[in-house]
Length: 160
Image: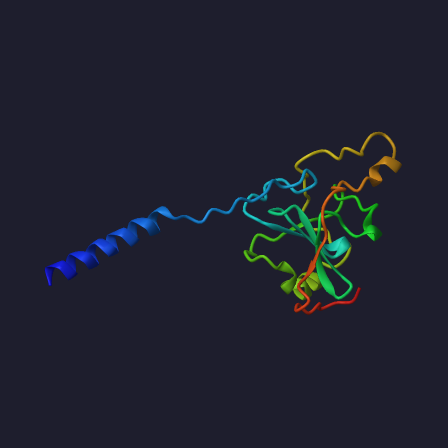
């Protein structure tokens, strides 16, 4: 009986110490220079003007196209002249999942195209801004990356 007790006790202590040593660490990627200052606890932005999300952890945009949500390092070509530095980004502090587009209906309604909330300062300066209005149309997004299609099961609650 003592042997069973000690075996159970040692097993319990072993698993307690293993559990105590295992920690889940989320390595959030660096926010982009066009991102708003002080958003260290958020993983996603919603960008109302382009009806897309940006995932800081993966450095990818998430947008709806062809009946599916696309993960890509660039915005769709129709937004190639969109200035991410001057566009408003809604920081999704209260969302902690990995599929923010499940709340697209809410975000689309609450933050319609043209939405501007409180003033935002970017983390960095727009590299395209010099002294001409033409150079301000730099998109500010990465030109490299692989496209990932998926999430066909997700219903899109809006028209594009």
